[in-house]
Length: 245
Length: 338
Image (tube, rainbow over all chains, first blue to last red; front, side):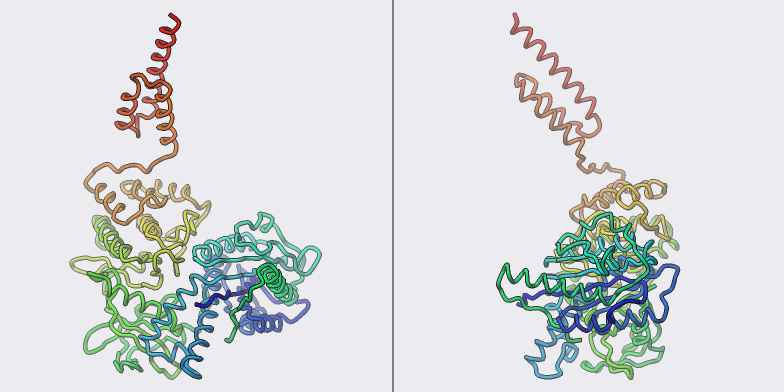
């Protein structure tokens, strides 16, 4: 059976980027490297403007992931749902490619008769339960996010609760942008325990810029580093899910 | 709250539309919409002059997944009557694209909370006993319901009987719960994991009990057992169930059968065994250790006492034994000195 891992970036923001690289291009770059980008737009009383929504949808679209705009109080439920949905999409993509190899071109799961589809679905479910999942979380900490941060923290703890109920392994990493000195700042390095996210998190905030693009770029290199450290340590070939959506 | 325009528009069909299956060639005439959730829309439809429920979704995966659950229900010995029975699975080529759907038995009736409002409180316990019985069968066959909530529970009849209409959250035991609703989810309240195990469903049952006194639910403030305990104590109508609710919220029941037995004995006024408490255990330990220092004569007394009343007379007993032992010891040292 397939023993790869699924790599995702989860971007939590409340508006448009205004500095540095184009985030949509960065998301496309991520997809090229087999990393899915999901975006959650958080609203409170304020409504995200048209431009912000277009960017959020654009990032998820070119990053092969899922986007959702929600009110802060629905954040917990959405974060775990979006992550799970994107994971299933990735697995389905892989399974579909396997099917195409076996059954010939243009055959996907949806082309099978419903009875056969059920059997394939069992495989997808099984993989979703056991596959290793790496999630890098990018949190927008610009001024307007300030009072939403406690909710974001709660949502992240809830995410770890959901994912840690799986049999498969999980690795989390948390970055915030803008950081104190740089555009992006590492808050929590790769760890299976997202609960270790400190209480500092809720109080974080910095100035007005929103460098979403550079943040995504840093996130990508973090995956790179992780991979190279891993390969130095274990020296075995690791295969990744590649995006094809 | 969430913006899910695509789902709604894709699966919105007007009454009178004929849904023709691509594989099995059955035809269904839509009568009206029954409801919609995160994973699709359910319609009342007509097929060969009988009413059926038809669920469609543009997400073929969730349809397939639910069909798998319903199929495995049917395979279980003495089929699980908790969920609806599956009649057909197919794809429909609409002018907006291909939509997967499945057809199930139409379960007619009010939802659980509406039923209670109509029929009065005397039905509540009966329905919970039924529900626990069905859950026990479900758990025995290796599944956990997951997204258990009053909206998913329909009371059919007469004779009145509880049925579940949405199996979208049903998960194989040992895996991670697929779908849940925060109020009924123990993870949300900080009272357990989201692993599919019987106690996950039993927590939801206790929350439904609380829900009967709080029709509008309430949201988390401090969370944890303290907030829920406070909520239960504020409502006199929950007093009768208090013990069962607390035991279930804290995961003390390993099976639905255990919870059912307790609920049943509440209705015929029997005592429920208390969940083991740490303080009491520590107490017992003290009592056990003491006699080992002074083996003569004192051991039988302590054991008897320990069995008789480990719950209420804990402290009284403790002092009594301490005094007796003290006397023995005094007598013993006195004899030695002489």
